[in-house]
Length: 178
Length: 241
Length: 206
Image 1 (cartoon, rainbow over the protein chains, first blue to last red):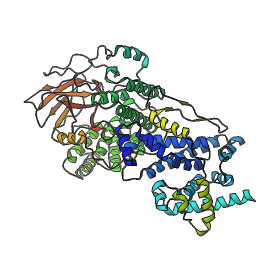
Image 2: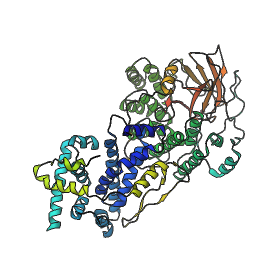
Image 3: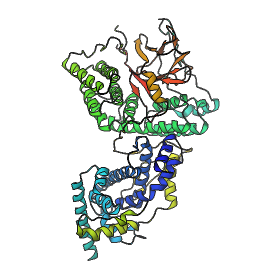
Image 4: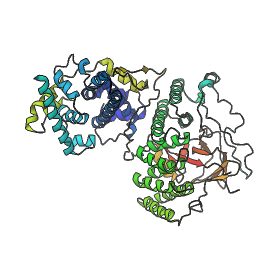
């Protein structure tokens, strides 16, 4: 069944239809959230919240959009909001070194199975805006026009973020790799 | 709108009895009197009751869980019960009813975020309707800025209606906010809704034109704020003492 | 879905190629979600588990509390800051469009009368056998408040005691067809059950 058919069924109240959409797109969302959030639990929360929000908003989905793009827009927003919230929580405990460490680079828990742990850690240390732009561009492989539609930012702003992100990654990786 | 929180204490009794609980003195429905004799019974604030016989057991169970969640989150349950009963009356499927109740609850939570925790149940209900009509939360915030807690029901209702009729949201927001912040402007707001509704039927773009004319008239004082706007549409207020 | 990101990486600048490739490779090697994890998500959305706000200890260790509704589809409160997006109005093939056409010729008035009651008058384009008013004041029960016939079969009237505040209502023709007053304020529509009217009754001035 096509996405459109599943969405139509969801709107009609078919309880299984949206579940199939979740199965279809979970992996893609997970991959992005995993690297964006840098923590497995946060990533899972973000993905689930995004699907929930997509479900609640399915009445507003416009068939002219690609479902994947629409879903990703929700996902990127969700990740961004969650990171802001996490940043606020981290700042509240600014005296607590452990909290700052955990908030900044908590990827040790994810490392098993991820080959390029150094890159993983470096991405986690990027400014969230740069991280998001970098992932959309080089991990998701989107064109700048698509990224602009998704984030609401101008293409030149996005290019700048990608550029800065790459520079910062180089710096971080250079330091780590010695 | 009936305000208040449905307490689930009597729920089990309702489940067992399977009937609509008695509403005491208040007239459960209307006595549609033909003559000009006014109704003799006084109006009471009744809480809508969840008539268990109108829902299948699974839907009912889930509705109860939804209402529990609303109570936990401090959201009014009367609007949700109202939506459920409406769905049952329209013979909507259980899934549809649950979806509408769920969506409305989520919308009320968002409405409370922007309208404030001191908002009345009617304001949250109206705010939820506005959000579900696609109105932006920031627009709701603009309306809240014009009216203190409890007094934004009419602006929100009018805003929702004229946006649904195709007035662009920024135009609608500016018009409603401009009138709303004037003193004693409820009648003027009703007049705005009425003008837009009438002109909407005349053709595309007519509603916005009429809105602009009306707004200019109201602000300049040409349209009196508190008087009825159009003679054929009686205002919704009690006659003067 | 193909792993197109591996095939179509275009670096922002030529120098970025090494980083771009490395990011793409990292992405491709992301540990897959377990089937259980996906299932959890599906169940959470479909069965609508009630999701507690995620609580974090000061040390950044999540303490998510989950609990499962006793039945299917309970409500979810989702924290979000994204505004609800309005779509272009979808044409509906259900009764709403038909209702709108009929409504265009229906006329209603709402009048407040003393004692806290409201009189609803409607004029229908065609005659009806019976007309009822339904709303939050009578549990939307079409049997509760039949309207009284006026001239011919086209004018109908009802007086309803109403508390001050917001009310929603509609009219039911011959026990089946739901219509709304086209000029009175409306609510709902596309993703609810269909349009209803709203009225706000002012408190009596003292």
